[in-house]
Length: 475
Figure 1: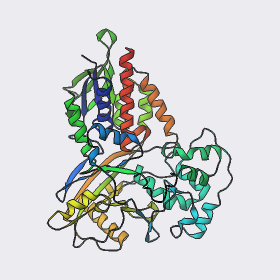
Figure 2: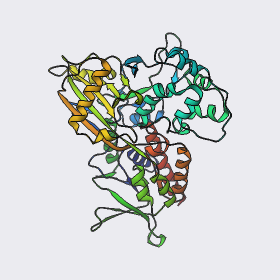
Figure 3: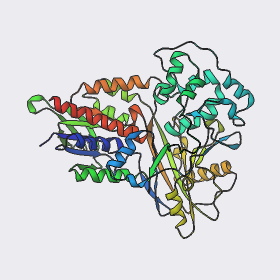
């Protein structure tokens, strides 16, 4: 019989780690403990207007291989879909503007093409990049870096809404090294940002060629990955427990067989779980508590990672009264003062969503919106009904048409959902991994380390599995 593995956390990172263990050690005995009533973490779904829709992540980056590779392993490749349109709009100065092309996370390679999104003086400032000294080995926030080179307007009106959509954070706090590593040399070497952007952009494609899509999803929603992955794990013999929250991790003495002991359940009547190897795939705060007794330095660093909370509000609007929605959605910079930071026009973006809306008795239009940024979560204290009203009002202002009362609505609150990659984040992540890897058979994974997207989390889970499996071989 193979070694026993305990995975704490049943989101995409933990489930991917469990799956990767089986790929390396087919004789393994793998148990997954998930504290909530459902698997998937920030990948979830709900019935809205009779249709199962994603209420967390809704797509994955197709240019990274890990997501599509896992989909292939789960025999879902034939159901991969891509957005019908990726043309989003930016709301700025009271009107919608087409999202400009030729940018890297909003940093333009050709500022001259940004009119009328930016004013002529703002464009002139972006073009007038000053000479700066090199800063070898240093990190800086994305916003401070770009503002120093191209001015505040590029940050406030282009970069903020894009980074806000990824991290629910603020450009002037998010690490350049962690969020935009392709731009880091321009800061550390003092070279031109414009040149760095142009070098980072994909090469032009021939006139008749089709550029590979940036994003991918699944027919019926990306939440299907979780169901398929859980089924595949159970087929391998994995045992998955829901509603079981881990409270402590400790090492067992060598004379007792070594390995680890994990405590769950209420303190008066705890349950003890023993395993040879443990992977912790929970958010920073619970991971810090779990590691306190086995990797205290890592626990201290994890406890300092701040999190942002947000909510996803999904509306099913009656087709005969819905506003005209163009493109895939709209992004809203914080300085515009609206509470909706982004809205996705789901039927425009995904053919399968539009098809299911049109199949209903009265055609339904599906829209989703996100509310909440790091340290700006007061709106999340409002009731579901109030959040729906906020979304309707903001959306009406953005598209210039009234938004009727929805046929159905769903509010998904994500408390402490997105880790904030503050300046110096990569160094902190390196300390965490170094300290944890010093404990043989222990690993961590998740969105807190090297990326918040689905492929990055899958990669994190696989890396953690490789680490504990290497410990197995060295034993």
